[in-house]
Image 1 (cartoon, one colour):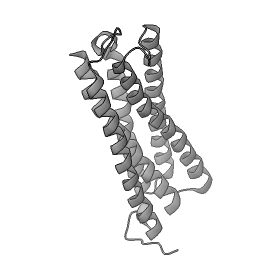
Image 2 (cartoon, rainbow, N blue to C red; image 1 turned 90 degrees about the horizontal axis):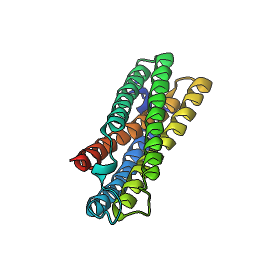
Image 3 (tube, rainbow, N blue to C red; image 1 turned 90 degrees about the vertical axis):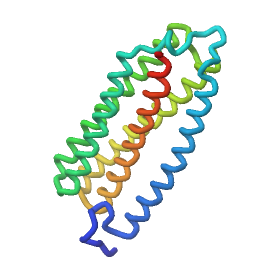
Length: 198
């Protein structure tokens, strides 16, 4: 396998470059998925039936903490990629661990929010608004949960195999995925929570 030393480690082989390109195509499909969920939500946002509206159930405190955790994790995964490119495996792993801990904190708050909504009588079957809300937030949360498992698997591979063109490629693709989740959250924060609180 020919390794191109002029390229960053994650792009070091033709196979690696193809995998990154393929992942960009996958993210295009993910954009279509979330665009559909956002469109559904925006169509149904005022269909409360006898249930509560967003203004009645949303609390800005937990949402701000979630936003802080996820945006900070976007910064730390960027630091992990930077460390990777400098060949600093230990620092890279530390930043990835911090990223995953921040993601786990985000997910914990989101699960707590879901339990709070259900306790207040806002369930998946209460109204069209709540159905679309739970599906949108749940899909994003499921992606974060998958990311936590994926990132943990990469950490195990880094520990076992060290930093080479294969683990660098996997780590870089994971960072693209994680940044994508952060971008989706910015849209959720803006068009679901902030709009809903107005």
